[in-house]
Length: 85
Image (cartoon, rainbow, N blue to C red; front, side, top):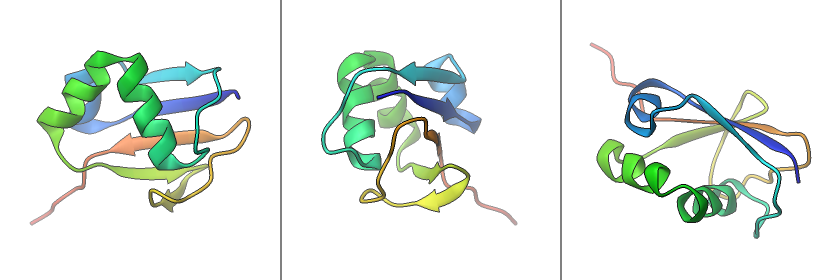
């Protein structure tokens, strides 16, 4: 599996990086599976999620939910919900 993962807004600030590449398989091959894999492999990501709270995701620039499949060569973005006013 080769997936580029990008981080935005306060998640990027909390995690201290804007992207990682995941070369290892993860199961299930979904957004939720990828998020769990990242938490296990990058303790800083798990800490950032705890501080940021709920995350939104996009797969190949389309909004996604936890059950959205993540395929080979996908680009997945994680970001906190945005509020406006």
